[in-house]
Length: 379
Image (cartoon, rainbow, N blue to C red):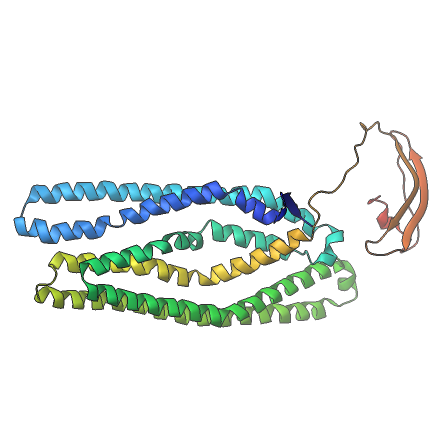
């Protein structure tokens, strides 16, 4: 099994690679903390402009507030740039650790019985792209949603209740998105793997299939598998698209309701005009991570399925192959009583083969069909 002993626990190769990036993930969380903290710049700026600048009509205060806000927003942009660069390098690090190993596992005939196929390479790309893209960032920003809600409650309880109701609706939509697409996307992934594996198996005998006129039938069979995969993906995308549309409508409409409710509270002298704009911005910031999570849910499901398949594939392959230390080559080749057989069989194709070649000599192999000529290069 491709697992690493760590005391009494066994850690898979994939988990070990992810653990080696823990420092970068922690750094991403720290950057996300300050980025979300700086998101309060805009509502605080609007609050000061409406409640202080417009009342005092002080141009100097307006200029000073604008300069401070610009500096804070520039800092937030720089932090987002650094966070993105860190995640890109995490993806490159994971690729360096796993890509060559997955590539060798795919092309090792001994691993075919373990179910390791070309899909493993695509699974590695899927996991890496999720960890370095908007999907992972949205999950880093999601824990800040309750803090924005607390601030909405601090402005006025009614505004907080409206925000919580909107949050519950979005969470329900996210759960519906998961339920409606999970099975379909899983079946689509299986069908994609089956189509890819069928194509790879057919390519090994492409010349023979072409000579026998079997390519139209092979192409039709692959097309049916591929078409079924496209149908399942389209069905899942349609369902997810409907829920994403509903979630976007909910978020925008709730922001409209916040403005209306804020206007009513302002008429009743319960909050100021600046609080209306500030609460609208804060609510938008609170709901944005949830909406992003819903929008990235499909990629999360695909990445989770890819992670499971990749972990199983790497766990089915030995971590290290034992090798024999060879002396420095001298140009002389000697073979004594060699035996060759197909993996997984007990019938020898060649046996008892012995020969010797001096430097500069060439050996040619001739014989009838299926005599084992193609096996010689592997020897």
